[in-house]
Image 1 (tube, helix red, strand yellow):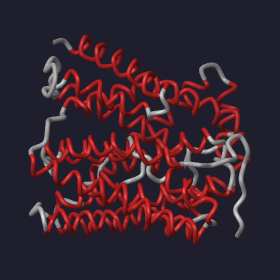
Image 2 (cartoon, one colour):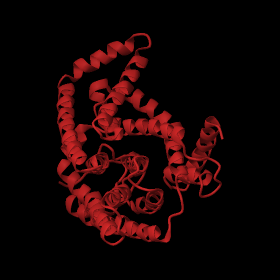
Image 3 (cartoon, helix red, strand yellow):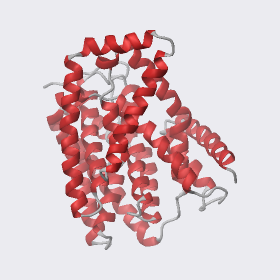
Image 4 (spheres, one colour):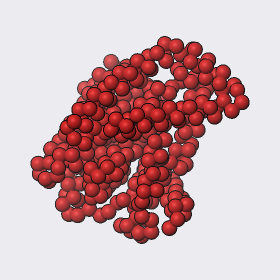
Length: 388
């Protein structure tokens, strides 16, 4: 089947199934993955994963992660770092460590596979959670910003582990490189914020010129690609580079109006093409796992779904107040682009096989269906405040 016809079929099916499941309150990612599974080897076997589709998937992932970074700010992370790290421990770090130990000691998986599958299954996805936070209109509240900050911490750790987990030397080199880059990132962010008016005036002058927005948008994409390429050269996945590049782009630099135009433009392209195509292509590599891997899947779901949820419930009660325990538990159960991105990177690098990859896809779907439904926030449409 030709490339254009394959993309056409995957895109139409992913868009239809995504809209259909969203109508029933289910995240669109579930329908989009199922679209790929339907046309992959496990069902109709009409479209096969290949290097060209993998290339399109990588480009799609770049734009998805870039927008995720653009939607966040370093300020949100810095202001809520203490509570965010506590929630990251309960929602991701501790459950992933437990899953890794079980996969390694009881199922006999190599350490690399144990860690990567646990990270991919256990990581809350900022893409899904950001949408949910905005849906409840709490993105500017203390509750919303604390949740988002915790997911930024978790996702950064997850990308770091995925990027650096090749061998001991690469791991140490990768960690040092990321720490150095983060320091430079925060210094650059501080410089941009301290000269916010001058920077905004600079972009305003460019925008006022003919084809100015094209120059600005093109420069942002080029800058994101440069940072991503640097990460690739030093042996770290481009995904983390795209995320960090996005963090530098905020309304204090571009101005609220231009920032809004940028996020709306990228958002529409992502929602209408890159996101459904990425998840549909991800579904093409799905195979039905063997009995041993299905048993592992049940254990991973139990730890990530049940144990992590209970841990989130109690941690949120202590950190944020008992009235938000169940809500925070529901938000932090969101799974999506980040976990699939980690799985895709690990599969393409040969770090995991297709059965473990399929386990991650199934876990993403199951957790996306169950955990977010636990949200019982009574303040939808208002901005709740936290008792500090």
